[in-house]
Image 1 (cartoon, rainbow, N blue to C red):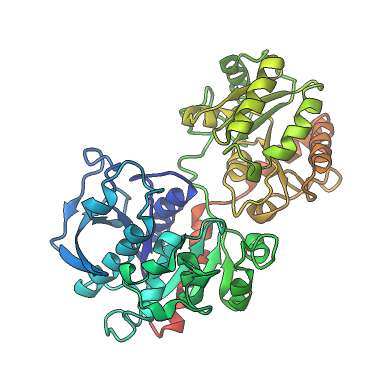
Image 2 (tube, helix red, strand yellow):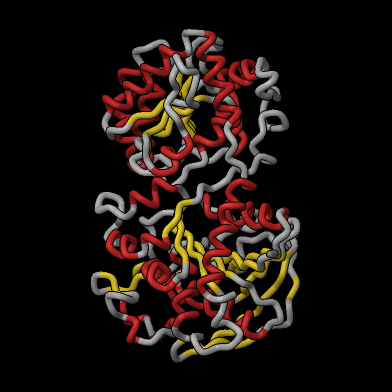
Length: 482
């Protein structure tokens, strides 16, 4: 059965991106379309979208939406920027023609309008999806409206919903007084509705009203049902346990492929890996590190925050810099870690370079030129860095949490199994232990060769993930009789 799916998100590549959600929203529909399904995307039309590079055209479906006591004019435009996928852009200048995408004082109203505009567009149009796939709190009111506001609507009432939680820490929590302003009845302010410790929680709304829920890894779907990771919503998630699934994000192998990556000094593959050494030499030169081919080079490409394990890394780093190793660190984040890493690099310029910026080309070069890739995260819903490093034959060292636990298997030299190194306890000692095992392992050429071959053989393509999403769409559609 060919499915019709509308994926709704607050950002999407190639239109606009601030994080991993945009990659998912751009890559998953493309993969689903290749499998023969009619998948479309809906996003806000931000002023940040380059209309010259990515043109769009009006659908003629402009209308006024009633939001509380005011009327807002909205138009829907279309774009074919994603191959094989129609993208709908919700154009409302007063809401989305701003500097920046998030962090506005009226974010609740802006994204509530986005949700209503999508549903009203579907109510007017000829095309009807079997499933609406929402993402994060910004689209959390779509399943709420479908089960309440539009419950009696003949065109919308049979549309099923799947909602993806990318990171439970971001929930969209607002004052209860805004319910009428976003077009919702105050009766929804209850424990089995949107009420959350005296406030309104958009993501909780999706958790309660969506037909199917999923997170971006199986382990994370289990973790968030506990008090440690549940962000005060573990009770709701446990009640929906039978409808909660984990599907790993995929990796766009057209973009992340060392055999074709033009940002590398030298292209290579699992079958011809020798040129990887040229990338290491070029990276060392670019970062001002001594060009020593045998010294183990560790890479980090990350948001520089405690959640990413920078706090335990900070304790390990002074000891590591006493060893014969090098570090290449790229990222931006909390000022505390900016200062800490900058100071460490100044004190040990022959062993460490820290670039505190966003640099896509350098990110590719770190993945391609390093021997090891560090991700000691406190929690990691999915993670793409470890998947990229596997693809590039750069051995990941990770904490066993979330998507890291689902993608990295600890290397066993005797069996020749595994694709990286893992640790469980969130402590500097456990991290240092995993790094020490990694350093010991690569001293043996046979083990090193086997480890890199295992890493590069891993398959985390979007096609694999898309097939798992299709199963969830079909399950959701079945619940609505679609």
